[in-house]
Image 1 (cartoon, rainbow, N blue to C red):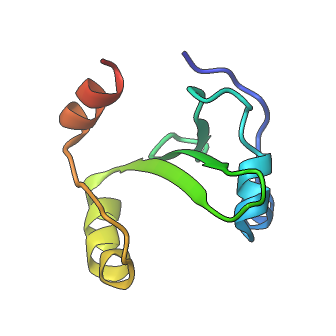
Image 2: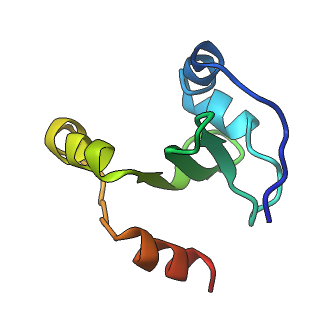
Length: 101
């Protein structure tokens, strides 16, 4: 189920992602509801959820990023080498089978 909340521009998105606290405060408040961000033509889609303990000592997060092949290749080449996170790359068919269980 998708619930449209509002359109955002890149400046708002950068403000939202400036700190872990801002990301957590933007969460819908339901442990099963993800924050989803998409561009106008839906060629990119970021789906994430984040939570923390009471003192913000530990942050727990999960995300998925869906994009076209051109952006996926760019992500693999430019971003993947910079991250220390555990990343699982799936085809769109595999991804949607997993999240729709």
